[in-house]
Amino acid sequence: MRKLLYLFVLVTIVVYFVRRNTIKLDGISGEILGLITDADTKYSLGYSHNKFAQIKIGMTEKEVMEIIGEPLVRWKPYKYSKYKKDKGHYVGLQYSESPSDTHYRIRQVYLDNGKVAEIISYYYID
Image (cartoon, rainbow, N blue to C red; front, side):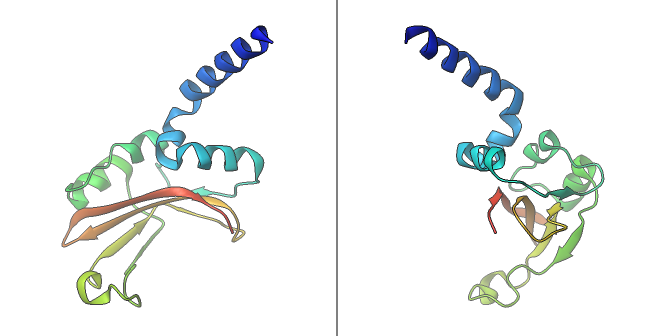
């Protein structure tokens, strides 16, 4: 039983170091869901988990583009929401999508007047 526990701890440590960037972005639950479901994520050209993790609140759009490049899509994320009054001017930069409209790893950056206001990353279950 003790050997089994040691093996579990060793495997957990190895998985963490190999997958730490996605764990930081999706959390433990996202990583587990990614292992047990069939994720279908298409990323923008030049995307990497490491680059996305470098994006910070307050960065300019230019700084984001220098790190990770152009998004797949630009849109107004709050255009039709109850937050339209306060956040209707936000611009969303989408760095991932699901080509088959199923489970995928969401990667989005929301800009408020050209500066990063929100960073969205999690494992989406459809």
